[in-house]
Image 1 (tube, rainbow, N blue to C red):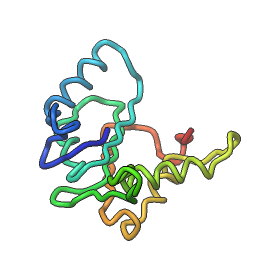
Image 2: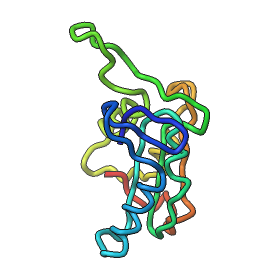
Image 3: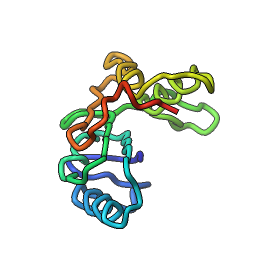
Image 4: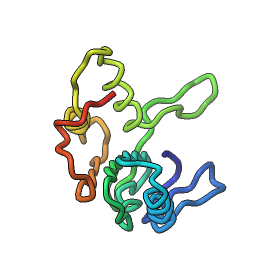
Length: 141
């Protein structure tokens, strides 16, 4: 998910707002209805980590582009349309996957370790307490 964020909220296209308790409730309902066994939530927005504060459902792994009080930044501007077209966290996540081939055994641990705060200009946050498998055992595909 991406949009404009703040402390425990994410705003989509300056219109719809998702708060941390909304996310937690949606995930809880999906878990109760057996819609997932394991779920990876990725959020690229300012203060992304705060969206995960209310999560309680087992099997959820969450990663955010920035910590509470941190901004999440755009990567580059498209001069033809005059706006930024991708954020740094999303850009570096995509770059990680584009380097892999279909036979790669790269793990989520490899992905998470690839996030360099000096490249992101923020600190990626991982919420792993609800997720039981070791990240080096989860193949990133």
